[in-house]
Length: 330
Image 1 (cartoon, rainbow, N blue to C red):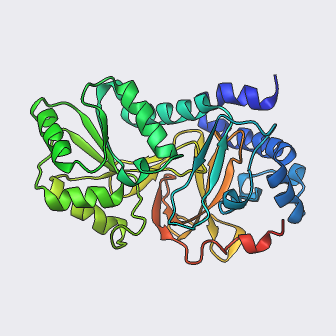
Image 2 (cartoon, rainbow, N blue to C red):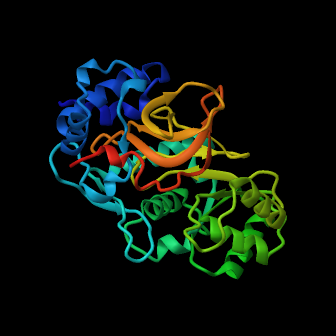
């Protein structure tokens, strides 16, 4: 059995003590079997066998998913997930070789932070994502809705009145509920209704995409808290190019599951890793579930990391489509 198949069976059992060892093994495997990543490393004149720490690994700019097919191993796949974007915008494409790998990742990550999905009713308010094809978020939500087994679990497009009626019924039953929503839709909900939720977790997943004015996460969460009667707003951090998600249970600080880790890089030097706690930088993600694409992604997000390894997302870099990619000549 080859390394990829072995890792696929073991990645979600990973002990944190062995994260770096496994990540370096996967790095060398992808450096050999991923044509795009191999070309990237070659352009940088990086010898994979001279890379001995996570900090030495070159992270592939996330923009490459817009222009190249980033695949490790044979070019076969079950599903293509695409990013959202305005008309005419080039979107990212993530070729997923094995959907069971994605399903295992989001199911186990959810259970790691929240327990069994069967304990919850899951309500998904994802209008912009439901209106297009290829959303990994919709795929995840749909699978979790089915796994929850609750008769009221389901999607809501723009039926806010129906959604609120369902929430009130579930609140009266003291049913633990998760409302997973995109930022602008939750904002609309919080403005239109005055709720006092006791048994509902509201989890925003980003996605303003020009539908409302951009505000910082803290201000956005305060709007939700006032309108929905909550002390804390939860968040999910994921993206088309990743198969794993980080979660925040309040105050905007995210934690990763054991097979995912975040590092920070200097904004003006994509190969300089920041090791100072509290210093802002651009977010690099190691996602060991990305066995068949690339596990080492340099995102366009800015963030901070605290002493415990939690991270905060501060926003996006200006001219993010240019940073990092100016070092690539394919």
